[in-house]
Amino acid sequence: MSDAPPSTQPLVLIEDVHTYYGKSHILHGVSLQIGAGEVVGLLGRNGVGKSTTLKTIMGLVQPSQGRVLLNGDPITGIPAHKLALRGIGYVPEDRRIFRLLTVMENLRTGLDRRGVTEGTKRALLDKVFKYFPVLAERRNQAGGTLSGGEQQMLAIARCMMLEPKIILLDEPTEGLMPRMVSQIGAIIDALHQENVAILLVEQNVPLTLSASQRVYIMEKGAVRHQCAASAIDVNDPVIKQYLGV
Amino acid sequence: MDAVAQFFQTFPYDQLLIQTVNGIVTGMILALVASGLTLIFGIMDVVNFAHGELFMLGAYVGVIVMVGTGSFWLALFIATLTVALIGAALQVVTLRPLIGRDPLNTILVTFGISLILQNYALWQFGPTSRKINEPITSHFILFYLEYPWYRILIAALSAVIIGGFWLFLKYSKFGVWIRATTQDRVMAQAMGIPVPLVYTGVFAIGAGMAAASGVLFAPLVGVNHTMGLDWVLKAFIVVVVGGMGNLGGSIAAAIFVSLLESYASIWVNPSQAVIVSFVVLILTLLFRPTGLFVPTPK
Figure (cartoon, rainbow over the protein chains, first blue to last red):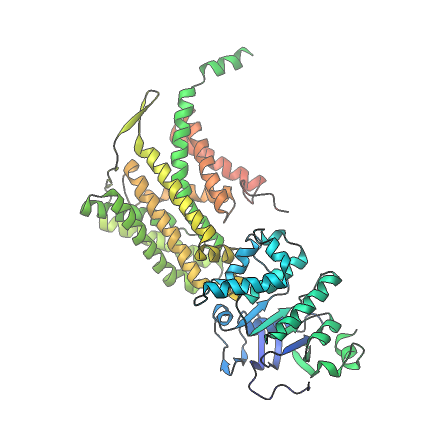
């Protein structure tokens, strides 16, 4: 593992991105990259622009300056639904499962795509039900009736239905019990084994450092530090400086 | 006690039954109109003031097809399809560019469309009412009335269309997309659902349902350029009473409000019975603004 970004063409490259919400300048020239199959952590205090970075990649927020590339192709301005079909998966901070849809219908939203054969659908469902057996048990239950941890599993499983090349994972362990947290850690590892890249935004520093190959640390809407995850630990002065833990 | 006993002895039970049938028939048509309206609101936050004119347009297309072919069923089918396509075109041209803008913009646009369609109909067809003949003219005896079977057919057909639509929403791919987009349009996009296409599809379906109800109802009242006004007003009442954007609530409210109006017209003039709807509307807004037929918000 090195602290340098991958030398080959990155899967996702963000160059000098500036994003505004109305008149509030949120991202002040963020640049970062994620290689194929790489797990990258994005750390920082609340409100430094981590979630906005994810939304900008997903096309849910348009940058006013700078560009986002997917496999070398500029994707700025492309609607989110097209990016989802091109391999960018998004698991938002508050899970945002479709509460009135059943577990199965939630999964169908990502499964009913053009060009997906019945065989592929079956295989994808089998895979997520193997990872998350509880979802198989609750497949006909409304998403809103699941517990917080189960909803998080559903959000990740739903995203996996799109067969993404990269998953933008925003605070997946927020508000979860410790047992669930380690389960989320395991699923990140499993996705990594399948060569799915992950951009992980997380307040849980130990989890981020153990799950990621590299980390970026953001402050005030810009990346201030990047290094290999193995190069630092929770007590590192850098972590103390930017995260205050 | 005597007064109570007297009330029950003289109570017009026959009229009560007749008005129940009437209320259900009107309620089913109203449910058909209101379903489109509530669906469009629920998914796009668009208050479609042109909905009544889509109803009227459906009836006129029905008149044209009836004159050309003489077939009521063909008229129903072609009117539904034509107005659905017109609805899709209207959505793409006028509403799609306004997505994300202040809701006032879409209100003004749909109001404008409603005026244009109304005046276009007046210009093309003149102020005289046109007639669509009912496909069945037989009657059955309901107490002292010869009750037309056609009215029962309207209720049944509306129920079939609404039922079919419910199955479509529940089981089809597009239905799941519609429900997902209604709940969370941002997340729907992130799941690869083509939200702009879903919007257009929903507007087309709503327009088609309005047109179908226009054709179904035309034999009872005649077709003129203002026929949509009454219906859209009632449909709005129903949509609010049923809980904005709540399909099941709107259907229940349509039947509930129509039944109340029918029962009221046992004692008062039918034009005064409309007051009941407004009373229900005001009471709903005062005491249960989320709608009568939705679970209490937690």
